[in-house]
Structures are given as structure tokens and as C-alpha cells.
Amino acid sequence: MMLTIAEGTVAELADIFRLLGDTTRLRITLCCRAHPIAVGDIAASLDISPSLVSHHLRLLRAARIVTADRQGKQVFYFVSDSHISRMVASMLEHLDEPRLDLD
Image (cartoon, rainbow, N blue to C red; front, side, top):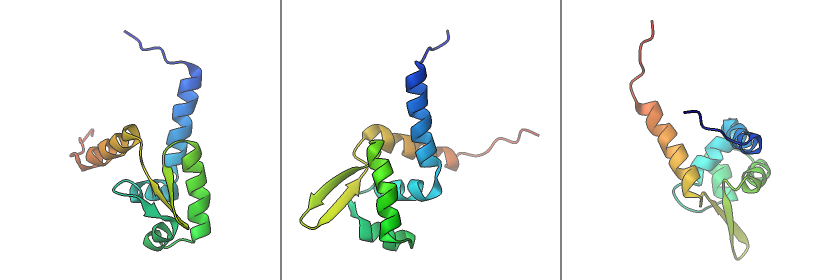
């Protein structure tokens, strides 16, 4: 049985994978998985500028991959969607599995 998925849905999925296919955005997403984290802390942990982190976070927010929570003057970002968290966790588990030798 073949599963039919609407073209618009496929395009949205492709956009999400394209966003997460960028190593900087993926690293930012990984930083935001465990707990809410401020832009400055993400920048320091990844050794990139806060303005670059903010640029990537805008894209990730637009795709609903991360959510922002303002607390006073600081904004904390986190992966609030359990689907995204599970997908990333599953992919990390996939990398830990032994690789099959296809030769």
C-alpha cells in the first residue's frame, strides 16, 4: 500500500529538513533541546556571534522548530515541539547504531 502525501506537505517537510541540514542551525537546535537557553549562551557555546545566532533563530522560529520566551531583557529559546525533539533524538540514536557493511 502506497501512502499518498500532499505536495504541500512534502514541500513543508523539505523546508524543515533543509533548515536542519545547515550545521549551524542544527547545532543551535541541539543547544535548545535540553532546556531554554539565551542567545548569548548559545553564541558562547558554539563560538559564533550573537547576531548570527539571532539570524538562525529567526528562521528556526518561523518554521516552528524553536520557541522564544522573553524573561525581562533576555529571550530564551527552546525546542517546545515534541515531534522535533523526538525526531532529533531518533536521528542521534540512528547514528549510534552499528553500520551495516554493504560490500
